[in-house]
Amino acid sequence: MPLDKPYLDVPGTTIFDAEQSRKGYHLNQFCMSLMKPENRQRFKANERAYLDEWQMSEEQKQAVLARDLNRCIALGGNIYFLAKIGATDGKSFQQMAGSMTGMTEEQYRAMMMAGGRSIEGNRYIGEKPAEKK
Amino acid sequence: MARITASVYTSHVPAIGAALDMGKTQEPYWQPLFQGYEFSKRWLKERRPDVVFLVYNDHANAFSLDLIPTFAIGAAAEFNVADEGWGPRPVPKVIGHPELASHIAQSVIQQDFDLTIANRMDVDHGLTVPLSLMCGQPQAWPCPVIPFAVNVVQYPVPSGRRCLNLGKAIRKAVESYDADLNVQIWGTGGMSHQLQGPRAGLINREFDNAFLDRMIGDPEAQAAMPHIDYVREAGSEGIELVMWLIARGAMADLAGGPPPKVVHRFYHVPASNTAVGHLILES
Image 1: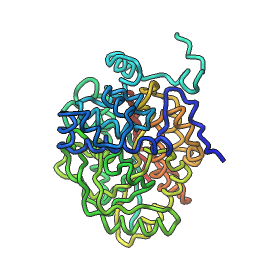
Image 2: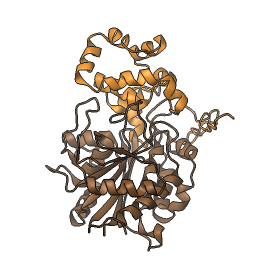
Image 3: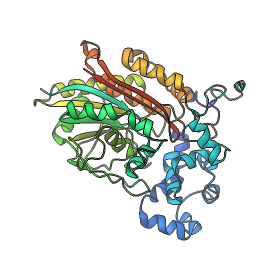
Image 4: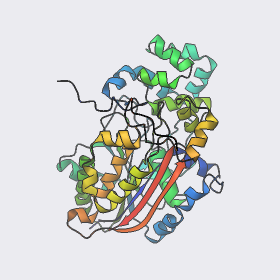
């Protein structure tokens, strides 16, 4: 019997379930290694060489090198693990989250100051967007 | 006998810790948020507990993907503050209460909850930000803390019903401890937020406030809410809110006692990517 995954129709959202976790194991463990200052230094000195020490797919390595967090997540990354890359780069969590939305940093910050992204039109894939007032 | 005298609920956004540590609490962006905790700091001084049982989640700091315990109780004598990639927060180390933690572990496992017992575990912002919000910046935290980590990183997280029932089991465990201790239970995380993907930045005030209402008046109804409703309405990381139900389940009204007294309620948007909610309930 297939597993019940009622969350697949939520727009702009990837739920880190057991399947994603399996795909992303080495990617996320690489991220975890960046909690140690000496590893952060080695990664910054030669990113490609450091990534090659991990059993990650080429696609995952390219996504990390490009800092394409949406791609990292599609390939099994989890945001709390990926945050270690942002920390290594000196980015805040807000900068990381904003980078996945297609907005500029300023636009994203302004949206949050104005109360955040509205739930209206954002519950289901294909839902009609909220009417602009 | 030990008893649970109050429960505290709060978000644990890491940026709040950073704002405190960098002395930004009076900046216009942060001032309204910290204002909402002024009452709470005074309240905690007056009602100083002997132990805080603090429910939170680890954010890929103590636990990597090598081990993913659904419920982990910290039974160590002390807990170091984790280096989450920016260096550890400059806050005091956390002193545990191994005797009470071990007692609770044994009692709760005998009530059919499979806890993982952690005798060594670093604690991250999920635990230290609530302590900072409630205690300010002391040289040492005012009392021992029992960290209780819940997996909300890898789906599925425990259901709301299971969390509420776990809270009830924790209450029984505390009440069977043979020393006169004043114990508070804190539930942390949330409120609505999404940190990933094109939908990042989601805030649902209506959901958050209805959640706060039900936490006060009808926790059983809140416990019946399925995961998908949290994900859809409160964002993929909004699901952290199930942890509040563990603290709520430990309150007296769910064991036949009177309803709790609401002594403080606060809601604010934004803190970084997130809405912030806060409640204090007394037994």
